[in-house]
Length: 183
Image 1 (spheres, helix red, strand yellow):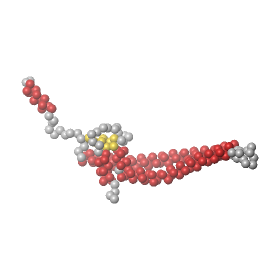
Image 2: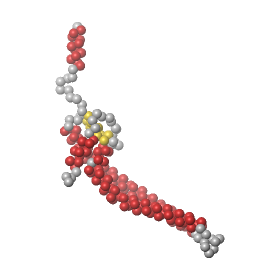
Image 3: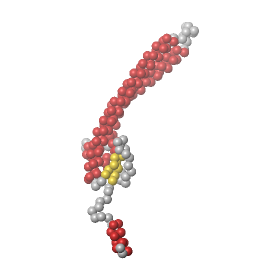
Image 4: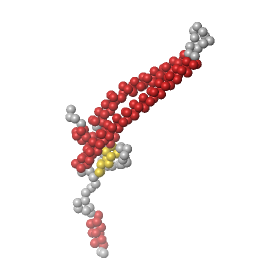
């Protein structure tokens, strides 16, 4: 083969093939998108409104139990005014009162765990609904703007990927236009 023909074949092979498309990829941080969407912010407000009063009540009960326990300890060390050789609270009374306090603490702990479990289920249900609609928007956005692939990062079920184009903010805008009520 002649050197000129060799160079021409190399140049022809180096040229892009006609009709070859460039691959356009993007990445969306799903956790950030869900948190920044109108529905995500609304879900946070709704969950706070629903669970904060119960959580506050449990915190008040815990503080009362702590104060009761401290009072029993203090009374068990204090001496009677009329009979200085006697304690205000006997050892038996202290054991009985502390047992009652422990039972109330166990009930409070169980109530707190139950409340936490209900909160987590409600939170997951809200997030799953928003995520499923968000993924529909991602698919529509991908085809509308010519993306070959949009990788979902920040989702526990997918691997984090580094991409050239972060489209999270655009996805949130499209989602809010599509699914949020117009004020």
